[in-house]
Amino acid sequence: MAATDLERFSNEEKRNLSLGGHVGFDSLPDQLVSKSVTQGFSFNILCVGETGIGKSTLMNTLFNTTFETEEASHYESAVRLRPRTYDLQESNVHLKLTIVDAVGFGDQINKDESYRPIVEYIDTQFENYLQEELKIRRSLFNYHDTRIHVCLYFITPTGHSLKSLDLVTMKKLDSKVNIIPIIAKADTISKSELHKFKIKIMSELVSNGVQIYQFPTDDEAVAEINSVMNAHLPFAVVGSTEEVKVGNKLVRARQYPWGVVQVENESHCDFVKLREMLIRVNMEDLREQTHTRHYELYRRCKLEEMGFKDTDPDNQPFSLQETYETKRKEFLGELQRKEEEMRQMFVNKVKETEAELKEKERELHEKFEHLKRIHQEEKRKVEEKRKELEDEMNAFNRRKVAVETLQSQSLQATSQQPLKKDKDKKKAGWWRGFLSLLMMARKKRP
Ligand code: GTP
Ligand code: MG
Image: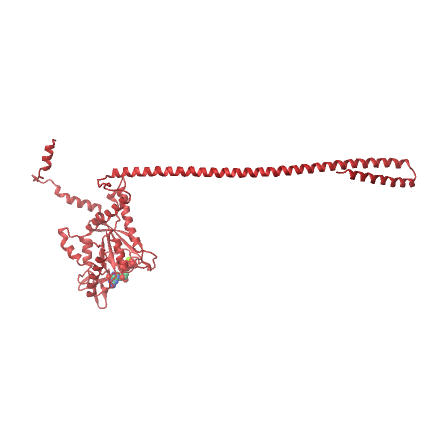
C-alpha cells in the first residue's frame, strides 16, 4: 500500500455498519457469565478486631450458616492469622469463601507490632499470586486465589473515638486491602451516641489520612445506592444466629429483658446495608479493586525492587527483554568482579600459608640441628665412659693373672717345705709379698 493510501486510510472515519440479520455476538456477555459460573468464584475476607468483638457471629449471620467458631484465647503472645476455606453454593453459583481471623489482636501488652503479621499475611498472598503469574507454565485458570478482597475492621463500640491501635493498623493496611470499618456490637451503644461516634470515627480517619474502601459510584446502575451507603460508613452492625419470634415471624435477633434487637431491621442496625454492599452489590468490585489496585501496586513495587523498569534513564520505553539483557550484563560483570576478588584472595591466602610453612620448616630444622648436637655430645661422653671401663677391666684382669700366678707359686713352695713352723713363716712371707704386689698394682692404675 502506498504512503498516501495509508494516510487516507488512517484519516478515514470509523464506519458503522448495520447487520443484515442476527449474527450472535450479542451472546458474548452470556458466554462470559456461563464461563464464570462454571469456573466458580473465590472471595476472601479478613476479619480484624479484638478477641470476642463478634467476628465469628457476624460471619455466621452474613452467610446465614454456621462456620466453625473456635473461641480465641486472650493469652496469645502475638497476633496470628487463621484462614479457613469453605465451599458455598447459592443457586448454581459456587463460591470458595475464605475467612481469615486475626487471632489475638489487641491482647498483647505491647501492641506496637500487632499490625505486622496481618501485613505479612496479605503480602504473602500477593507474592504467591505473583509467583504463579511469573511461571512459564502458569495455571491461573484453576489457581486458588487467596488474596484478601476485603478487610472488615471491627471497631469496639466505646462511643469515644478510635484507639491508636485501630488507626495505626488501618493506616498500615489501607494500601494493601479494601478496608470496610464497622462498629461491632452496635446494640450496646445508644442511637445518639452512635451517630456522634460515626462522625468522630470518619473525621479521625480523614485527619489521619486512612483510605477506607469507597463503594464505587462510576457504574450508573449502582451509583446512587453506593453514594448513599458511603455516607453511612462506618456501618454499625449487630450479629446473632439466634432466632426470635417477632409478630408471627421468626427473625434473627438478640433478645434482652427490655426488648429485641433485630439484626435485619434497618432501624435497629446497619447489618442489611453491610450485607447488601459487601455481597450483593460490590463483591465483584472488591475483587477487581484487589487485583487492579492493591495487587498491581504490590507487583509494581516488587518488580521495581527486582530492577525491572518500564523506561530507561532517558525516559524512553524499556522492554522486558532489554531490562533482562542489562541485568544479565550487570550480573555477569558483578560475577566476574567477584571471581577476580576471590582469585586474588585465594592467591594471597596461598602465599600466606606458604610463608607460614617455610617458617615452620626453618624452626623444625633448627630444632633438629640442636637435637643432633646434643645427641653427638652424649654419644662422645658414652664412648669415653666405655673406654674408661674397658681400661679398668684390663687392669683388673692383669691383677687377677698376677694374683693367680702368685698363688700357684706359693702352693709349689709349700709342698717343698714339710715343717709346719716353716710353713707358717712362709705363709706370712707370702702374704707380705702379695700385699706389696697389690699396692704396686693400685699405684699403676690411672
Ligand atoms: P474470637 O474469635 O474468640 O476472637 O471472638 P469473636 O470476635 O469471633 O466473637 P464471637 O462471635 O465469638 O462473639 C463473642 C461474644 O459476643 C458472644 O457471646 C456473642 O454472642 C457476642 N456477640 C456477638 N455479636 C454481638 C453483637 O452484635 N452484640 C452483642 N451484644 N453481643 C454480640
Ligand atoms: Mg471468632
